[in-house]
Image (cartoon, rainbow, N blue to C red; front, side):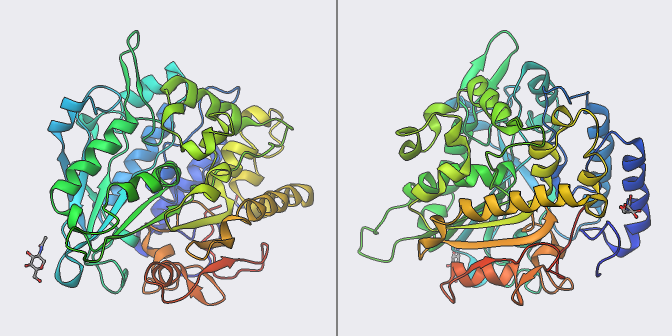
Length: 448
Ligand SMILES: *[C@@H]1O[C@H](CO)[C@@H](O)[C@H](O)[C@H]1NC(C)=O
Ligand SMILES: *[C@@H]1O[C@H](CO)[C@@H](O)[C@H](O)[C@H]1NC(C)=O
């Protein structure tokens, strides 16, 4: 599938008309900015609590049913495991239910290698947003899908996922609301903020069922899950011994953060919408003590929830994959409704072709900020980087953006995403790819 208007993402050809109709319906309603959810993680990430917040619940539910329809046709469905024992350690979802994960066991040469994927899906920053979350699959394992599709880097297909298809692949469900980093309990509202405990309990459980003796491990995730990867990467490394008792080779541990590079950027009204949103999340959910100490030693907690202030201090090898025109950030950080009361950005933020010259200039400046934010990071030989000039959000878990087999993933200098990540992970090549500015790249799968 090549470029076809606004919709070039994960839709299968046979479902395209249905999806397109759904997309148009959403656009015509005029109140929503997401033309098509690139990934599951995009669907519940609406910022809530600002002036622009106006009850996305109904819209979210409508889009959930579309997502379920897509999931139903996906190739590999992996069943859920609810980790009841985690509740003993107080590791519970927002509503007090036990956390959960999905595991597809490895095989053959991959049977002692592990991918741990942290699910994404926004955050919650106030009582109303957390109440909504608590009564959804993002806050309760009672409401989670009993099985979910594994695609892209989680795929079991050697053609779609040549480097990782036979690894043990685990997706840890996201049900806390602060990128697996909160700690607290709101008695009045009955909100458990136990992200850090969930992280800890599920990783320890996975270690106990074989991961402790892994040859290779990769922590990954996109969107809020990508941010979680950035925050927890060194903690993940610390779960594995540096050297084995018998003097054997220790586990190779690396991290991949997809669409997790949320910038502390100035929005279209001159404010900092995302900063104030993050500040609320960090305060409400007790995130501060769980942020990387190297950052909190010199900056305030909210700043340390922003990857740009954390990535230079990560010691474990980590790869940042991000679209320079990150659609979630355009819609929720740069031009959220609260920062665009007159609606001047409404058309542009759901359709890149509708952006005028000054809006495009604003977006190019945002790209420049993103590129600048990784300057120090890219100086480290063990790190990897792929910043492509696409209007996208999450590119590692969809066949169309991950795999060359699916018709050509986005590429920089002819090297696609799966190969870039694999080359970096296995040390086949250094990967520090930064694309030329939009619209130079003809390989994108734009979602707006
Ligand atoms: C991995 O494969 C080896 C043989 O190749 C086998 O002995 C071992 O039990 C397997 N481990 C797992 C976790 O399946
Ligand atoms: C996107 O914007 C362009 C330019 O304004 C317009 O021609 C096109 O119809 C728009 N596409 C959609 C789906 O709204």
